[in-house]
Image 1 (cartoon, rainbow, N blue to C red):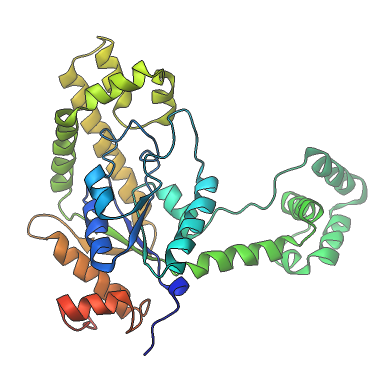
Image 2: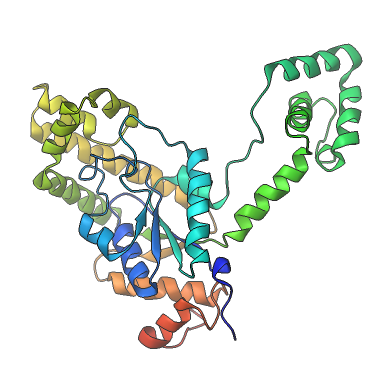
Length: 341
């Protein structure tokens, strides 16, 4: 079988809770495939927060190209919608160059933006909205629905009642602003998401206590690596107001420590708790997505085993062909693909 076109290679998504080891797994998979990594961690976007967000180290970034890591100043912003456009464009460029793109991170909203997209059509126009709402009040909801059926019968067919004025007004507003039916824009949005052919994974810790211990130890390593000094540098650069706005876990606690409002031990303990609670919320988010393949993690499970299991699953479900990088790796290193992988 011939290789699939480069732009049709699957997007591999490696998600999971903070401290679970997803970055190490993504690095291992990327090195095996000659792939590139797209960060899906919203706090790793910012320069000067590398230690406190456990961003890929300079050495790791030399080993594998990483995108959207340390590319914004703390006073700049990246919304999920903006990330969707930028990350999809970058994934397309990587795949067009004949390489595999791997999205790795724990920010569920940003992963959803990349994989499924955030769609609400063009912006809103208060004047158009007020006029359409006025027409509904003066001439009746049925009149407005008939107008929608004339310009966008497909979307109108999805409405169960003429009393759904909010959706009717929005669809007509989109038509006036974009000059195209709302349903057509929806279809284009779905096609863009489907073209990614994303295969999603997350790391599963059957014993939650093991994950929490990893989190506690990671926070301690951050302090050992110079996290306090990192926050000092941010303050010296004038970014203290942004520390709260960015909501990066633990930075406010370290800032309070620098101000003499609490001890370092207290700041560390609070940060560990914040990370454990965040991990619980992340697990709840990812568990709700039935498309995610869960990989075992914890004592006795190596990154190599996780990597080979991940690649075997991608190959088994048909997201990679016999001529692709994934099959070449498996044939050279892990043997034939098993049907029960």
